[in-house]
Image (cartoon, rainbow, N blue to C red):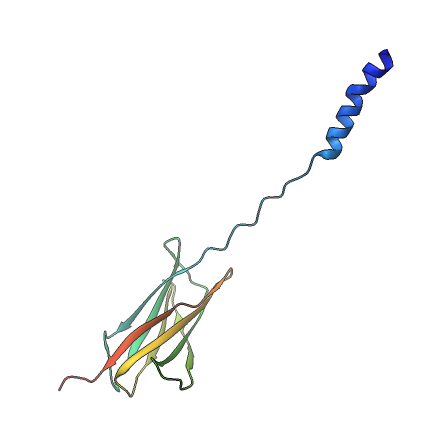
Length: 132
């Protein structure tokens, strides 16, 4: 009987050791960049070059090493889209210098690839005739 009393705690400890599981921390979710789009001038003018700029930030910090492309097309038009790589600076600004031949509303999808994630928000901008 004494043997049984001594074996019971040892058996319980052995079983507890077998049933324990290791938990691995879940990988952190990638931070989704915040993209602010603007044109200069606003609105853009027909046949006058201007800048399309996307400012890319994560947690209020500029993203300096992203790949950014602007995919541009006329709103409501099924013509082929034009994709232009943007030039970046050390403040998280990615810019395309371009002119437009037609006064209309355009759409732009800003394809942004960081080390962690790819995002592609779509926004509108307007091109108007220059005032005479």
